[in-house]
Image 1 (cartoon, rainbow, N blue to C red):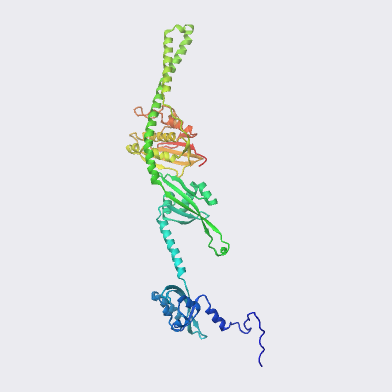
Image 2: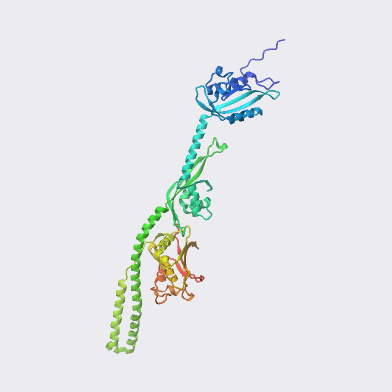
Length: 519
């Protein structure tokens, strides 16, 4: 009995219920049209079958490869160890994957990313080899090109004298070059890159905030750090945002961006040091002129101070004599002489006062106290060396600006340093050390100048700020105007100056000045 024909339909027929295997023809068509090169060989690697993709990639027709050994694709440049590894895996009846350099029919070379697997029968014996490969030449070239570009960029970045660092949103260091690491070792105590980043953020607060929140780039922002015994460092900073697409798989169809921050720091210390040297040379001439005028003012003030006493005595004696003589005062020759002397004295005082060189008003501006101290130390180097004084300069790494007159503040520091040098130049002083430090304390800029001289007795710590009072021996040079001038300058800057009475190993003068709120 012949079974009835199945109902004809345009829909594909499902496999028979009693078997879930596809028809052999479907397998054959699937392999033939697969986009990857597929070949089947015997146990000696002779080709028994090659699909269309195999023929397209290699350039050989079906008739040209059937019965031929797979070695017809070999270029002879693949290392022998690769083939040994391949056949070793086949002997173990395990698949092997790797890359070979193959030759097409037209003699052009390509990279074949190959997987070879043994085909086993029901007894577990290898009866064929199944080979699958694809041309990865373009992918390899692209990967190699990207890798070469990465290596070149890394070489340029690592060799660049500019310090570079890339930060993520949490300000963590993602990438930094050796120059940045060296800068960190120079500027922060622990030498950590993260500590230097925190220091830069602190000193670039406004531009860094705009870069971080708005992506606004900045360029050429200069900051300086005074390192005490070493030369100060001047840095020119540049910042820009880098937008990179998220690499995670779950955002493949909805790409998002990550913002990174690139900071580039150029060390311009050498340039600024040359400018500072030129400025110091001009400053020496300017300060010499100012000291000459200051000396003239002190001389006139000293003369007025000394003349004021006798004139006052004459005036007092004249008033006493007038009261004693009463109505006869107008005819007394002594009283007339005293009146003439008083008038002459007052006229002399007026002439002296009018002859005092006028101190020009100085405009207030932001002043870096550390810079002024360094300038004064440089200007006093010869004096320090001549007296064998060792100086220890410990500035705050970053000090706020002080609003004031640059010239007068520099003069104030110079008076204090010269007073310290003078106190240590006495013969009985064997240890000659000068310690200068700055820091921020109680919302004030605090400067301490400490010397190892004989110090100031407690009962004189207030008197030394009086004009023309000096603790120096009579034969020593000194007009007693150094500390009064210092006090006058500090007072004009709304600051305070005092002698630290708790310090017993010499003399410590403390100056406290308010700093600008904008810093």
